[in-house]
Image (tube, rainbow, N blue to C red):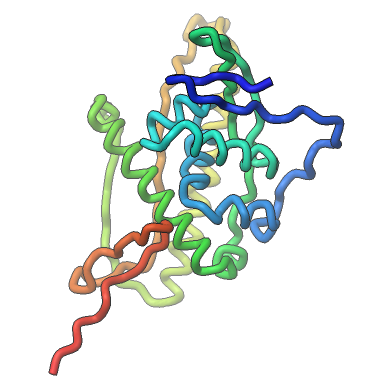
Length: 238
């Protein structure tokens, strides 16, 4: 039964059928994942639902998009098996549906390099916008006030071998970060520890980038209306 959202807009809840559950997406080349990347707003919705559960009403407010548009893309992601319905709540006489992203495939080096340029550019554009908003909002609310907080931008000149070595070192560091997070999750799962030192949950942001830099003279890339990244045309001199 359709549910009415904020401002009288109608959100259609996902249809519950007797179909078997969709096969998990484990390959970046899966047509369902490729379709999900076909629109920059869907990429941003996926990124937001990977962090927390939210309703289309909440997402539309943060994305500065109409409720109808966001609800449509959420339904598309749900039908592709990339998000799942995790909760329903009554709000202002209407049923609000809350979704969360399912675990999606990681990008091996060969899969990322083989991804279609348009899909890759759309994804990069959406992810960079999402990261910028996340970091800016966190900084404004004191997210960098802890003495251990860290932010570094470093420009280096490497050869092919060194770039590969640095990429491998980054992956090892991320593996270590995941182990640290898993150990923290175990401690947080025990509210009353024997030593009386209860763990406190700290919402933590971690952004790691490794990329080939471009000289500032080339100018920043521009974003087309469909979310693709393009560089300014070269200046031709006589």
